[in-house]
Image (tube, rainbow, N blue to C red; front, side):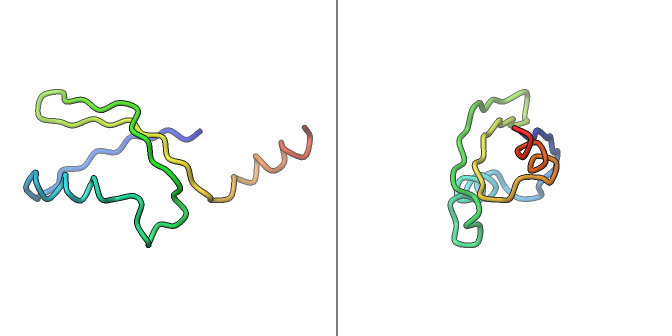
Length: 71
């Protein structure tokens, strides 16, 4: 599992940001993303926080392949 946090300030109005966010997946340019599920979403003040689980078809990291051989 990979966990990360990003922060950014978008210089667009709220309608543009939310519209782009909701149309992100699925899209024909990101065929490697199979699913995107929202686990949690909440506001703290004027900030929107989202926790998601993304299922992808990407290859596992090299260290995972080595572990797999020993199982």
